Length: 149
Image (cartoon, rainbow, N blue to C red; front, top):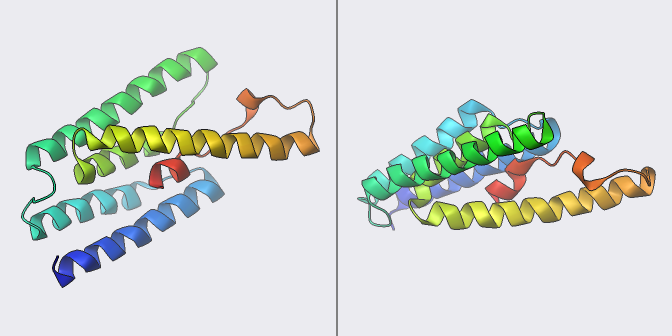
């Protein structure tokens, strides 16, 4: 790996840190950070001559990951009758798909959902100590943290 590729990975880690931090604090994944992540992935692949994924796998990863999350969002919105998943999460997965490619983005999405579930359980337990009647489905979990991790 070249020094430039290592520098890009370091910058991606910083962008991911700020995405997670902002989602935890404000429940927002800013477009400019998601775009920066996607661009950094593309630059990384260009610098490494697309050794880890092909251009086709990258595009399919972005489209497949974002498409699946949009589908989940539509179903969950109808079920809960409110916004259940932000479009920032969809854009984050699209950027991640550019980097991880197809089918690896689905593994990342599955692990992110598991981490989000565990985070939600911890948030619920914390809320139950303050308000014993709170239900699990009332907890608003920032999905970005799990997806970033």
